[in-house]
Length: 74
Image (cartoon, rainbow, N blue to C red; front, side):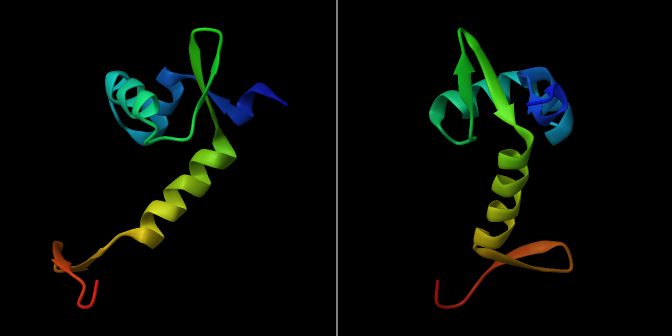
């Protein structure tokens, strides 16, 4: 698999516009799809992109004028 299809913690932090420490915490807690190669976390780009899409789909809030409002019946 070509390297451009994998992220390191730093690369994923840049991609998601998050701090690397947050990426580490979420990976360790299982909140991000990740795996370890030795002591290093790795993230498959296609899996991260699918995870992002799932987060958008599973979002339990609707937005009106930039403010989150709870959906009815959830």
